[in-house]
Image (cartoon, rainbow, N blue to C red; front, side, top):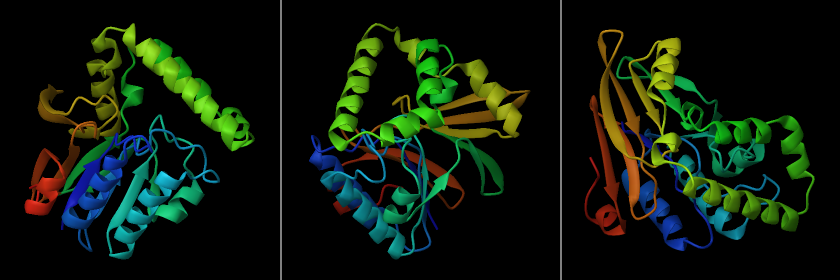
Length: 249
């Protein structure tokens, strides 16, 4: 049995190759009995369960096909697709997952997060996140027409790009103190998250014992996934040729 983790695909119509890469990953790497955790930002923008775009429909169909083959799918909201709800779950075959969530893997408690709440040095982003995650904001967006939602999403993407250009890179990364406090609060020694697009495995000491933070990569140039099988973790990248030639682990 394989347990896989992915995040930050940012699927959109402008990058159709990503949809093909996801389809290849689902078909070649996952079998019945396997589990896939999607830790946020599957889409560049999810405008609501009632406003599925054609390119998004393809991804939903591919996820549903994987679920029908016996793959267990979990989805955690990211900062780009936090409007995904019960309709998304029904269409994709995914089970919605709270952020954060603790699972047990190989007899060990593992904390799963999207990761944006750990970027506490970026106070501007945290203020934005608090504002858009309210029920009032959600209801407002879902009351808009599709054209208005698309325009709103473009506005926020533009603002995000503008603000990111003006910030030192370290501000947009996680805060180590926040990482340690969060892991301590949940009683874990391993954390898996995305959001920062800084694929890496960080080993450190927490309260005198070994601890580990695994950062999932984005799908900008290649696919990225973490796999757990036979008691071992493997974090790697792949393209369509890799998927056709060999398994990742």
